[in-house]
Length: 124
Image (cartoon, rainbow, N blue to C red; front, side):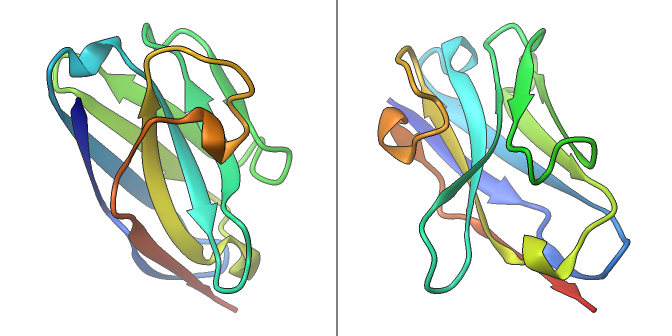
């Protein structure tokens, strides 16, 4: 079992940057693959980024590739999402997710644990 708590959301103008954090706690939190999803009002939850346990491999949705960077600090059991060149269409609740093993990591059903989310609003 792992608990996830996101922070760092807020209101930013288009072109700006934000860094989200996700603190993981619980048994062997560092042994989980972790990821970020987002959900805008009236839309399905959408994969944003994922990172392996070791942190040496990351993968992104095409919509954020080149603008967002996922990283993790296993000593602090914390996942990060650096978001640059933000656009109004990035506005959503951003959720942290964790799973020990699985497939189809771009699908929300593949993840076992979820945080409550943090709101990101990008104004034009």
